[in-house]
Amino acid sequence: MSIDSIINNIDWDKLRTFYFVANAGGFSQASPHLNLAQSTLSRTIQNLESELGFSVFIRHRNGIFLTKEGEILFKAAKNIFSEIKLAIDDVESETKEPQGSLRLVIAGGLLHFFVMPYIPPFIKKYPNINLTLVAADSIPTLDLLEADVAIRPKLPERDDLIQRHLLTNHVQLYASKDYLKEFGTPERPEDLDHHRLIGFGDHKEALSFQGMNWHLTLGKAPGEVRIPYIQANTPHARLTLAQAGIGITAISAEHPGLKALNLIQVLPDLVGPTVDNYYIYSQAHQNSKKIKVLEEYLLKAFKQDYAKI
Image (cartoon, rainbow, N blue to C red; front, side, top):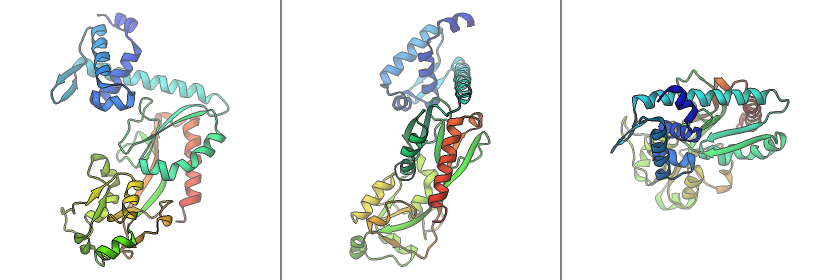
């Protein structure tokens, strides 16, 4: 099939589906982003391949892999969608007021407890910006198909991104009075060997938040890790477990709801690790009004509310 024939006959919805599946690395991974069943995605790709006249994926029991033709098409699709996104941003920037869709992928705890209080007043101030907020600890692809902005720990060695510091979380250990009454209060880091510990998790997304697993290695020899009694990757879940007397958890001292839970700080004389969080977006979108106004709004709000904590 000639290039002209492909361009004239290609279904852009199918191309978008192909991009998502290829970018995610599989049908199961892309399914939540597109809100479509894996079987539907598979049929869509098969139909696209039939229209194109060549295969874009090699199916294998260990997953799917791009064919040589698929790699070429994926690169082209990424460029096409990126150019469309930039064009839309340029058009929107010509207006006086920021407007248009803005998709944010935010680490779950940051979204619910730190970012959300600022969203209603922001929407009232900029009613023509259509926000989509996605809670996820995973690292998004910062393009129009997955995220315009990420709020999370810094992404190292990414010179193509603008990363503005928003908030430093100082990690400390906490437990309930009932737990400490039943199991005793640790006096040294080594005492944690004999306690029930609530961990953040051992999934790959936890690497950026490893400070929340501080108590699993505190006082241990290099390479040694305590096995947590239970794991939860949201601060709300860990605090709920700690409040119920289940164990000792690591949590940000800045957490807005911490004081109301009447938890007791464990090993308070130790200085815990920090987790720094950033407002992150592609340099290609540095002139986007909607991204910039939200950036400045959040930077000002976080500086005002957390800089002196």
